[in-house]
Image 1 (cartoon, rainbow, N blue to C red):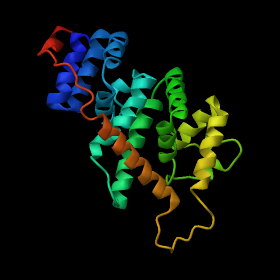
Image 2: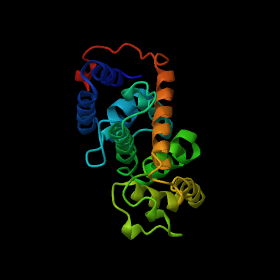
Image 3: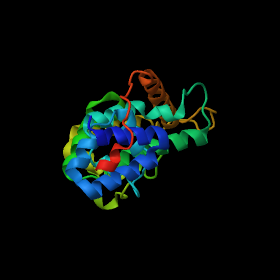
Image 4: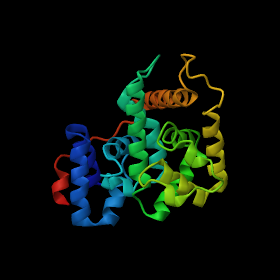
Amino acid sequence: MNDTALAIRQTLQQSGPLAAENQLTVIGHQAGDEQLALIVQALLPGEVAAIVGEGDYTKPSIAGHFVTPEQFLGALERFGARWGRLEGNIRGDMVSQMSQEVADFVFSVILTGDEGHRHSLMNALLADPLGKDVLILVAVDEVGCPEFLEDDVLDIGMAEKGTWQELYVEIEHIDRHGLLSLKKEIMALYPRDFDSESGKDHPSRRFITRTLKTMSRMAAKHVGQEKPAEAKAEVFSDV
């Protein structure tokens, strides 16, 4: 890893993701996108999750434009580290907050990038078990779900920008079979015979909670496995 990337790592460890984001922004202005891409792609997936996870669709991280599909999947596997170990029942407001954090991360990386980057990331998600579950998680219980999916062809004119609806329209363009698979799983989470007075959580909410717990467990397995090299002090000043 080059000295500048090590300095970003040091800033992340000592001052947090917002400070690291600010450094990356300066690098982008001074050295250009090509150099910035090399630095971002030298970061570990957990570091990508920390930096990019602070943004959302309205204010995405500059690093999100340069992460590789492998980094993106690795970051998802480590994203749950921010929640700690999730056990037992989780309050509904906490489930909503955590699922929104995942959605913000996904949308800020995918929906703000160029077409080639978007498609490579979406293909990676569709081919990965956790990635596919995350694509379902960001849709269920959101506005227009499952109604938006009921037509044979999704209505791009009705898709709300910056949401799961825009993401699913993109998926339809690149992988019709993948979209149909997602639709089938989502529709199964909305059984017509569900008794809302039974006292049980709705199947869609159970799916979200189960996926969040899976992400938490996966992140815990990665703790301690990645031991970054010690960063050099103040090398960023040389950029």
